[in-house]
Image (cartoon, rainbow, N blue to C red; front, side, top):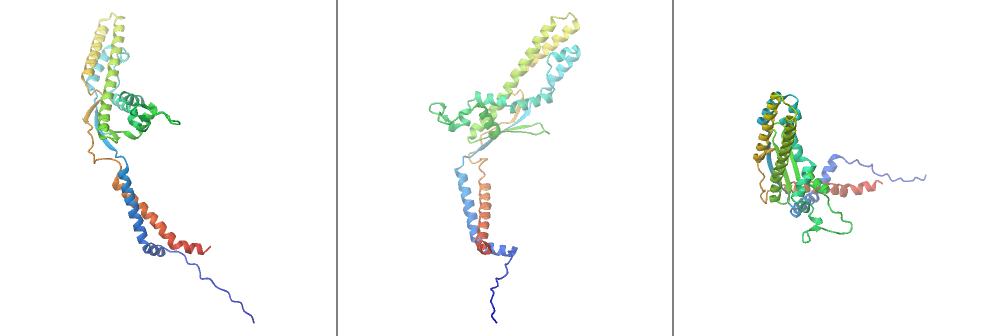
Length: 298
């Protein structure tokens, strides 16, 4: 009786956790080597990157509460005329206005233009010798809106503490002296801008009150208008005399030390390289260990 022999293949074995651990232990030198190489490479790359420094100025809103209370008292003496004469916003709203102005597009674009920052923000597109934008096929000259996007997006950071009201202005840039200068100058410029605006508003109110003065012969109303005009004149004098009009500088910005850069974080980059290299080593080890076995099942 003829019999036929059949070759029985061994049952396929499942890959368990201990198999994975054993495989990784056998290939531990590959994992270690790749981790060290990747960490060293990331650390080396950090030395090729341009350092970025941070300059910070701490500000406090310079609210004029005495000015507000004096004018509010005068308003009660002349009724609705006080509101029309431009007694101003409550101090909380003035603080909000000052912060919004500091962050606004119009102020920021004016700051960039007045201080000639476009070539500094876009050095690759600027010909320093010719003092003109490079003209090359396909190259588009950066606009002032591009300047705002760079300065507001990656250079300037505004942080406000709602509890204390303090505002911190950060400038992150490759030149520590420029970063500090920009931070301090931006505060000076916003103070100048809001001071000039306050003087214009007060003068407009004076002009209006003087026109109303000609329309009335009531002694009480005329006396109230005179006092209100006097208050606005005092406000103009105070505004012109107060250098830190909208923001008082608590702590001015100073250039950072050459070694005190914010980016790159070399330790973090090295750690990330170690982790990435270790993961790559694990994947490679598992592929070397179980790749042939999985291929043989097909």
